[in-house]
Length: 587
Image 1 (spheres, rainbow, N blue to C red):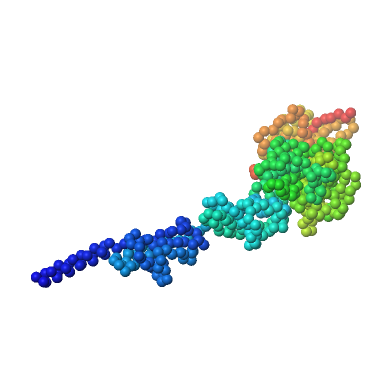
Image 2 (image 1 turned 60 degrees about the vertical axis):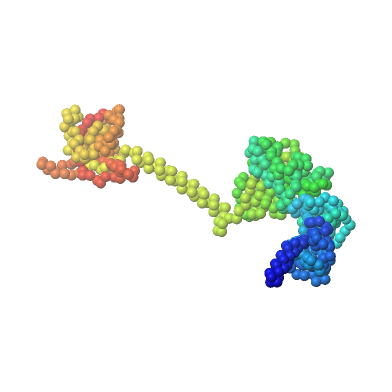
């Protein structure tokens, strides 16, 4: 019985202990002040909250490590050094003697807004230019701005700062903001380095630079270094005049083509005409007050067409010249305009085309006594009122080694003579090909002549039977002979005694067989050939007799198939013809 009661008491005590364990209070960490977000430099108050009972002794932990000296319900920390994970727990002497330990509560630092500095205009900055610095802080607007130059803190100011003389204030600039509410301060900006370059320069290009009437011409202007915010203005050059805007070297004054310009980098002349020839410049400006670049180097629009008022002439009249020669250029005036001067443009710029070095001036003519490669360039004449002549592009080159102008002249002359000779030879060859009067050599022996033959009777018995197959037909060749008693072996032509006499002759009728077509002469007596008669001894059945003969050279032309060259036939065998006798009356 006693044993049973002991078991019941033990069970009740166990149940009571278990009930108390389930009812332990739960602790938690809360931020009392300030409210999140928390910023660096702020003092943060934390509280350990346990809903039941009040006689707790508090235990604090940061990152699972005890704060040995902190036992109060609240604790104060300073950021950012004490940021971390915080826990707390309550302990007491009565039941319950402890609370649950609280979950981790992170205490972290939120970075304050960061200030930034910008500059306008952007890009490269120039000495004398006015610029504006701007301090920007995101998220809030009630800032008081502080500017730093080389880490020196000046008095507070506005969010923007204007610098008007950059050359005196090249430095590092920073800013930051302050305010009464949280966050009370921004982070300081990164340093902005302000530096300047030399005076800016505009660069002009013209396309095309040689004008044809009616073309559109485009002027393009850029600032030499990369930068932004420019507006462009365009000008035409005129001879220098006091009181007009002028280039730095006073080589030209300028007249405005457009006002304080446009953001467009190009200007178009459309259509361009003779009055548009001449020089052009541009410049750019930006800011308020406006800061201007220097004028660009002049660029020129040229025309090769002769102008009505003036033209430039060259002597020698060519554009290619050689060194160490004389060259003259003349401004040929055609009106009453005055003040003309010769100008020259090279890659280095524009200058007077007739400087004293190796040059002389006579009237409107400039003579270069000894040319050099440096004399190459575009030359033109311009008047005091801004009129321009045509332009010529002259190139001066060095002659190759061992070569001179006289040698070149001789070479060219030789080539011309050779061409003329070849032409003459060609014409002669053509003439020879058409010539038909060549013959092969023939010997025509003659029968012993009689003095009383009737020519009519001999007509049928004296037809020529030439063994040469190359000639036959109707062209007659007559060989006139003297009477047998009056033949002179060394004489030429036909001889007769006074009064009437017998004349011995041979009639030959050759015809070319190698020609397919030939025109017959209208007169059957045309193309007669008269030759010298000779006498030789020969033997007949009745004994030695004198034989009278004529020697005729005939040459036959042969045309080759591929090369049109004439050749002579080899000498053929002798052909003998009968001789006829006719009576003639002397006058």
